[in-house]
Amino acid sequence: MYLLRAPLRDYAWGSATLLAELQGRVPTGRPEAELWMGAHPGAPAGAVPAADPQAEEVPLHELLATDPDRLLGEAARFGRLPYLVKLLAAGRPLSIQAHPTLDQARAGFAAEEAAGVPASAPHRNYKDDNHKPEMVVALTPFAALCGFRSAVDTATSFSRLAAVLAENPVLVEDPVPAEAPVLAEDIGHDDGAAGSAETLAGAVAGFAERLLRSGDGDDPAAESAAIESVFCGLLDPDGPWASGTWVGAAVAALAKAPRVLDEDLNLATAVGIAEHYPRDPGVLVSVLLHRLDLAPGQAIHLPAGNVHAYLYGLGVEVMAASDNVLRGGLTPKHVDIPELRRVVAFESVPVPYSTPTSHGPGHLVFRPPFEEFQVERLDLPAADGSTLTARGPVIAVCTAGRVRVSAGADTAELSPGESVFLGADEPAATVHGSDGTLFAVTLP
Image (cartoon, rainbow, N blue to C red; front, side):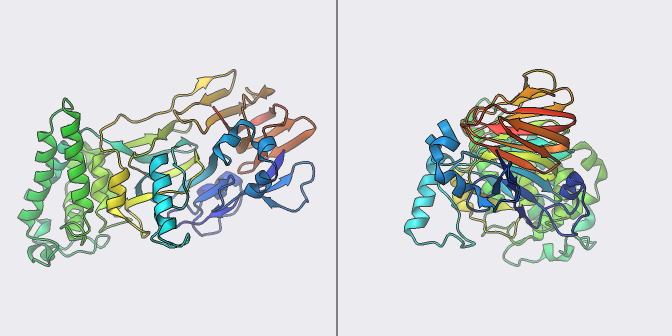
C-alpha cells in the first residue's frame, strides 16, 4: 500500500474555499480546482510506502513502470493505470466541452504528433491518445449542464427569449448592465458582427423555429441536425454571435424579465453564467443542455461526445486516464470549433444519472457503462469492517471523518483529501472507523 501525495491544480474556475473546508485548513485565497490522484503524466501523484511515510516520493507512473504486471494485474491490458481520480471543486462554471472516443483520440493525437505540435502548445487539442469517459459523485450541492435537451424543450426556451427581446426596451433605450459591458445602442449599428434589435430577436426566433420543425423526436436524424445547426450557429467564430454584442443584449433583456427566469431554469442559468462570461456565446449554448442540480451522493456519468459543463460544487470525479478536452466556450483556453463539432454526439439524451447498488450496510457501488473503472462508496460506521470489492489496482480517497484502510500488514489512517494506492497483487483491503466516508476506485 502506498500513500499518495496529490498535486493541486489551480485552474481559474476553482473554488477558493471548498477543498480547504473539506480538508479542515485555512483557505489560501487562491483558486483550488482539482486534486489529482493518479498516474497521468500531466500531474502524477507522488507515492510513498504506507509502512515508511518518510521515504522519498516516487511519481506514481514511474512506480507502476517498475512492475506493471504485478501492480496493475489485469489492468495492464490498458497499458497504463486506466483511470484518474480527482477531487473537483468548482467555484465558477467550467468550459463547455466534450471528449473524444478512443478512435478519435488516437487519430487526433497521432496527427498532432506527426505535425510536430509541441505537447505544451496552448493550441494543442490532444494531450494523449486516450478517451475520457467520466463520472462525478457530488459531495456538496453540485450544479451541471449535461447533454442536449429535446429540440422541442429547447425551442420553448428560445421562443421565450425571442419574445423578451422583441418586447423589452432595454435593447434601444437602456445601457446593458456593467457585468455585460455592451451598450444597447451598439445593437443598432452594423459593426460586421451584430445588426438591429429586430435582427437579434429574429435570429433567436429562427433557432426556435428550426428546432420545432425537427419534430418531437419521431425523426432523430432531423432533431440531431437541428441541434447541430443551432449549436454551431452560436459558436461560429465568423458568425453574428462571436463579437459578444448579441449575447450581452440578450442577457440584459432577460435580466429585466424576472417572470420568464422564474419559469425557465435554462434561461435563468444562462443569466447566471453571464455573470462570469458576459460576452461568451457559450452563455446561450447552455440553453441547449440539461441543467441539473445534484444533491450530495448523487452521480452522473458522461460518455464520449456528451457536451457538458460543471457550474459549481465539490465532487469526486473519476475518468479514464486522459486529459483530452475539446472546448466550445466559457473559457480563455484554446477553442477549436471544427474539431469539437467532429467529436460531439448531436442527439438529445436523458440525463445519464448513475444509480448505485448496495453491497452491504453503508457500502454502495457505482458501475457506469465504462470498462476502465467502477466507484465504491463506504460510509462509516455502517460499513465498518467491509472489504473492498476490488479487482485490479485501487485508489481510495477519504472525503469525511477518519478512515483506516488495512491490507495485509499495511495500514493507513486517512483524513479528508488523503488517499492511497493498492497494487493488484495486494490482499483485499478492509475499511474501519467510527465516522467517515471513503471512495475507492478500481476495475468493474
